[in-house]
Length: 187
Image (cartoon, rainbow, N blue to C red; front, side):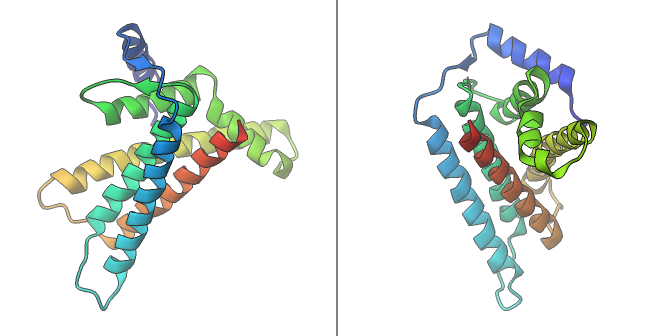
Protein backbone atom coordinates (compact mmCIF):
# COMPACT_ATOMS: atom_id res chain seq x y z
CA UNK A 1 0.00 0.00 0.00
CA UNK A 2 1.41 3.33 -1.05
CA UNK A 3 1.76 6.02 1.56
CA UNK A 4 1.02 9.03 -0.63
CA UNK A 5 0.44 11.51 2.19
CA UNK A 6 3.62 10.43 3.99
CA UNK A 7 5.56 10.69 0.73
CA UNK A 8 4.17 14.13 0.00
CA UNK A 9 4.96 15.36 3.50
CA UNK A 10 8.51 13.97 3.54
CA UNK A 11 9.43 15.24 0.07
CA UNK A 12 7.98 18.70 0.70
CA UNK A 13 10.04 18.84 3.91
CA UNK A 14 13.18 17.82 2.01
CA UNK A 15 12.45 20.49 -0.61
CA UNK A 16 11.96 23.12 2.11
CA UNK A 17 15.22 22.04 3.75
CA UNK A 18 17.10 22.31 0.45
CA UNK A 19 17.77 18.55 0.43
CA UNK A 20 16.47 17.96 -3.08
CA UNK A 21 18.95 19.55 -5.41
CA UNK A 22 20.00 19.55 -9.06
CA UNK A 23 22.11 16.48 -9.86
CA UNK A 24 25.48 16.40 -11.56
CA UNK A 25 25.17 16.02 -15.33
CA UNK A 26 26.60 12.48 -15.39
CA UNK A 27 24.52 11.16 -12.48
CA UNK A 28 21.83 9.47 -14.59
CA UNK A 29 24.29 7.46 -16.69
CA UNK A 30 26.43 6.61 -13.67
CA UNK A 31 23.53 5.16 -11.69
CA UNK A 32 22.04 3.34 -14.68
CA UNK A 33 25.44 1.67 -15.03
CA UNK A 34 25.46 0.76 -11.35
CA UNK A 35 21.93 -0.60 -11.74
CA UNK A 36 22.77 -2.93 -14.61
CA UNK A 37 26.00 -3.99 -12.88
CA UNK A 38 24.06 -4.89 -9.72
CA UNK A 39 21.52 -6.77 -11.84
CA UNK A 40 24.33 -8.74 -13.51
CA UNK A 41 25.80 -9.57 -10.09
CA UNK A 42 22.38 -10.73 -8.86
CA UNK A 43 21.95 -12.95 -11.93
CA UNK A 44 25.37 -14.53 -11.48
CA UNK A 45 24.94 -15.16 -7.77
CA UNK A 46 21.51 -16.64 -8.43
CA UNK A 47 22.95 -18.95 -11.07
CA UNK A 48 25.71 -20.14 -8.74
CA UNK A 49 23.36 -20.50 -5.76
CA UNK A 50 20.73 -22.39 -7.76
CA UNK A 51 23.33 -24.79 -9.19
CA UNK A 52 22.83 -28.11 -7.39
CA UNK A 53 26.52 -28.96 -7.96
CA UNK A 54 27.78 -25.81 -6.26
CA UNK A 55 27.95 -25.59 -2.47
CA UNK A 56 27.62 -21.79 -2.38
CA UNK A 57 24.03 -20.91 -1.51
CA UNK A 58 23.82 -17.17 -1.11
CA UNK A 59 20.28 -16.17 -2.02
CA UNK A 60 20.45 -13.27 0.46
CA UNK A 61 23.01 -11.61 -1.82
CA UNK A 62 20.71 -12.11 -4.82
CA UNK A 63 18.02 -10.21 -2.92
CA UNK A 64 20.47 -7.50 -1.86
CA UNK A 65 22.00 -7.01 -5.31
CA UNK A 66 18.52 -7.04 -6.90
CA UNK A 67 17.30 -4.35 -4.52
CA UNK A 68 20.39 -2.22 -5.17
CA UNK A 69 19.76 -2.52 -8.90
CA UNK A 70 16.30 -1.07 -8.29
CA UNK A 71 17.63 1.61 -5.93
CA UNK A 72 20.28 2.71 -8.45
CA UNK A 73 17.71 2.72 -11.29
CA UNK A 74 15.42 4.88 -9.14
CA UNK A 75 18.32 7.25 -8.46
CA UNK A 76 18.99 7.47 -12.22
CA UNK A 77 15.30 8.13 -12.88
CA UNK A 78 15.25 10.95 -10.35
CA UNK A 79 18.39 12.41 -11.94
CA UNK A 80 16.71 12.18 -15.34
CA UNK A 81 14.01 14.48 -13.97
CA UNK A 82 16.63 16.78 -12.46
CA UNK A 83 16.32 15.60 -8.85
CA UNK A 84 18.98 14.49 -6.41
CA UNK A 85 18.25 13.62 -2.80
CA UNK A 86 21.02 15.13 -0.70
CA UNK A 87 20.68 13.54 2.74
CA UNK A 88 23.24 11.93 5.02
CA UNK A 89 20.91 9.27 6.43
CA UNK A 90 17.70 7.67 5.24
CA UNK A 91 18.48 7.83 1.51
CA UNK A 92 16.67 4.55 0.77
CA UNK A 93 13.46 5.66 2.47
CA UNK A 94 13.68 9.11 0.87
CA UNK A 95 14.21 7.58 -2.57
CA UNK A 96 11.08 5.45 -2.23
CA UNK A 97 9.05 8.46 -1.12
CA UNK A 98 10.50 10.56 -3.96
CA UNK A 99 9.37 7.91 -6.45
CA UNK A 100 5.88 7.93 -5.01
CA UNK A 101 5.72 11.73 -4.87
CA UNK A 102 7.28 12.69 -8.20
CA UNK A 103 6.07 9.79 -10.33
CA UNK A 104 2.69 8.93 -8.84
CA UNK A 105 1.30 11.81 -6.79
CA UNK A 106 2.60 14.96 -8.47
CA UNK A 107 2.04 14.38 -12.16
CA UNK A 108 1.55 10.65 -12.64
CA UNK A 109 4.65 10.15 -14.82
CA UNK A 110 4.49 6.38 -14.32
CA UNK A 111 0.87 6.16 -15.40
CA UNK A 112 1.66 8.29 -18.46
CA UNK A 113 4.55 5.99 -19.31
CA UNK A 114 2.34 2.92 -19.12
CA UNK A 115 -0.41 4.61 -21.13
CA UNK A 116 2.11 5.23 -23.92
CA UNK A 117 3.45 1.69 -23.65
CA UNK A 118 0.08 -0.04 -23.73
CA UNK A 119 -2.23 2.29 -25.68
CA UNK A 120 -2.28 0.09 -28.78
CA UNK A 121 -3.36 -2.96 -26.75
CA UNK A 122 -6.61 -1.60 -25.31
CA UNK A 123 -9.94 -0.72 -26.87
CA UNK A 124 -11.20 1.79 -24.32
CA UNK A 125 -9.58 4.76 -22.64
CA UNK A 126 -10.98 3.72 -19.26
CA UNK A 127 -9.46 0.26 -19.52
CA UNK A 128 -6.13 1.84 -20.48
CA UNK A 129 -6.24 4.25 -17.53
CA UNK A 130 -7.02 1.43 -15.11
CA UNK A 131 -4.19 -0.69 -16.49
CA UNK A 132 -1.70 2.18 -16.38
CA UNK A 133 -2.63 2.97 -12.76
CA UNK A 134 -2.29 -0.71 -11.81
CA UNK A 135 1.12 -1.03 -13.52
CA UNK A 136 2.41 2.16 -11.86
CA UNK A 137 1.32 0.97 -8.43
CA UNK A 138 2.86 -2.47 -9.03
CA UNK A 139 6.21 -0.90 -9.92
CA UNK A 140 6.25 1.29 -6.81
CA UNK A 141 5.08 -1.56 -4.58
CA UNK A 142 7.75 -3.86 -6.02
CA UNK A 143 10.40 -1.32 -5.03
CA UNK A 144 9.00 -1.11 -1.50
CA UNK A 145 8.72 -4.90 -1.14
CA UNK A 146 12.32 -5.36 -2.20
CA UNK A 147 13.49 -2.59 0.11
CA UNK A 148 11.78 -4.32 3.04
CA UNK A 149 12.97 -7.79 1.98
CA UNK A 150 16.59 -6.66 1.73
CA UNK A 151 16.39 -5.24 5.25
CA UNK A 152 14.90 -8.46 6.66
CA UNK A 153 17.36 -10.87 5.06
CA UNK A 154 20.37 -8.66 5.72
CA UNK A 155 19.80 -7.64 9.32
CA UNK A 156 17.37 -9.99 11.07
CA UNK A 157 18.85 -13.01 12.79
CA UNK A 158 17.42 -16.36 11.85
CA UNK A 159 15.96 -15.19 8.54
CA UNK A 160 17.27 -17.28 5.67
CA UNK A 161 16.68 -16.23 2.09
CA UNK A 162 15.18 -19.02 0.04
CA UNK A 163 15.63 -19.59 -3.65
CA UNK A 164 12.08 -18.61 -4.64
CA UNK A 165 12.35 -15.29 -2.76
CA UNK A 166 15.64 -14.56 -4.51
CA UNK A 167 14.12 -15.41 -7.88
CA UNK A 168 11.21 -13.03 -7.22
CA UNK A 169 13.66 -10.28 -6.26
CA UNK A 170 15.66 -10.82 -9.42
CA UNK A 171 12.53 -10.75 -11.61
CA UNK A 172 11.31 -7.56 -9.96
CA UNK A 173 14.69 -5.90 -10.41
CA UNK A 174 14.81 -6.86 -14.09
CA UNK A 175 11.32 -5.47 -14.64
CA UNK A 176 12.06 -2.29 -12.67
CA UNK A 177 15.31 -1.63 -14.55
CA UNK A 178 13.63 -2.18 -17.90
CA UNK A 179 10.75 0.19 -17.12
CA UNK A 180 13.13 2.90 -15.88
CA UNK A 181 15.29 2.48 -18.98
CA UNK A 182 12.22 2.83 -21.22
CA UNK A 183 11.02 5.93 -19.35
CA UNK A 184 14.42 7.57 -19.68
CA UNK A 185 14.75 6.68 -23.36
CA UNK A 186 11.26 7.91 -24.21
CA UNK A 187 11.86 11.45 -22.97
